[in-house]
Length: 155
Length: 227
Image 1: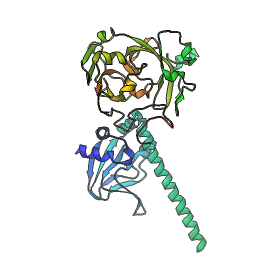
Image 2: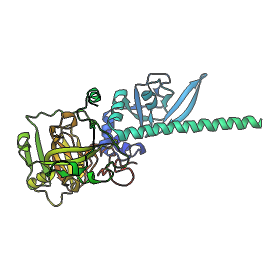
Image 3: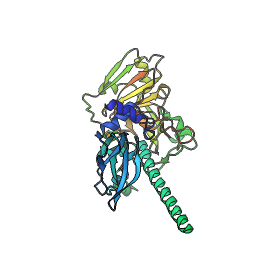
């Protein structure tokens, strides 16, 4: 089972250059968990004590406001989730549930920190991806502000 | 400065230097060619005056009584040495710089140890051997090195650094030193070498680090296989 996941990980852009053995070390640092559609993996406001790598399936990142779920984004295989909250020591900023049958690699807090501390190449990649996600969010925010202004001007 | 030294508890702190190779007062010493460059700091690197510690698992548990060094793979005569036997082998001194992939360079080091060429000669390396896999005591850690770098005149299995035994955190009792490649190729706690026809990724190389690791190539040096 882990053999297949190791192969899968070597194909993710974030882990470009990893061999199957290199990917196995990532798997050994955590635990693979399967989730059925609808299962809640992360809950907004919870303590951040593990990080997820989506291995297969599809997850949905959402927040609940005024009794409604607002879906922020979908997370496909190769995406890391929960790393910013864990690194910043803040509670989960959103919830995550499985949209399809999904498998994730769950790294406990300490194992994830050790991976980053020991491996400057990996930390550069993971921080790079996390920061790109933030930049994209900022762009989306700016776009929505501009749209709002335009809409306001035409009314 | 000595007060500062005691504060940072780094007896290897370099107050002065680096010396130029011609200032090294030892007619026998092998001068690593990169120390003769006008600018000794490779692209993207910064000089450190300290001797930082970096490793995959922390210092390896090495028992000096049972320590052995093995040579196998594409050789006519596989070899095995106890620490005592290893210390009887011919010794050289090398003056070289040390470049870590995490962007620090420690200049002006004197390493004492057994030349890699001596080990290769004793074992009788086959002509089809093109790569060397260095094996270490830290939990199966390995690194791969092209044979032409392994056999450079300034490559050695060192047991002294600046005249003192290499402490465990820096890879003692014996570590490989390949001054012309990034320092992760200079396996700490080395326990042997395997001569191979095909290149085989080692521990960090399996995580996307460069198969050769030359710090002097144009751009940013050969750090990773994903940039």
